[in-house]
Length: 301
Image (tube, rainbow, N blue to C red; front, side, top):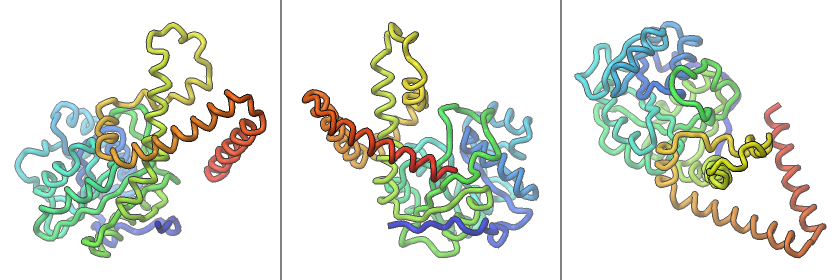
């Protein structure tokens, strides 16, 4: 199904010159953290931040996070980018891949940080010219916080980044994307866009739905004083950007609804056991869940 490639740190200088130009579209938490990590690991690279809010880009440039601020819909830049990462909401990534391609040199490689891959990989690659390639990727790192002011150069350290090549991608372009993420500290796993969407629906998208549904039960605020650590931990991700997550759910609708069906079945098993006061069934399900959670903690150590 997928291949783990977490061994060597990789050497993106094999593809990106030591004085290369890297474009980042969307200088928010993820894009800003990529910029910060580049500054830490590749000080010779020039980081060009692209977006549609000149004021916000200028602030990031003045803070030293990016070297150049550029409106993505403006005229092509000089020098043009050797490599680009699109970190905008999933509903806009394909459009922004086509837009940033105008600012890239011939044969450049573009990747992204989107949480959904099948639709993006299908829509982003079709109209690229001049030998420019798009290879999808998704760093499994982030926060409910937003904006470049929360960026961290260590955000990707020992985190998994999923790279989702397609049959249309060249080996050199895929290698370039994998090496780039490894050089920022990430462990790389490679799989198809479809496998990514099926797995992430269960491990990322479903948790956000369930956290939001649970947090929504106390919207009136009547029980806030009684929401302890367990409730707050369980619903932490519900504080994420509503528009961004709406786009993710819509873009991955088939896999998210399938994951919701599986979760509903699990809830029904719990409900039935509790209703029937079946202590053994309840205990077995809780023990299985505890073992799964402890396994995750062990893998993070």
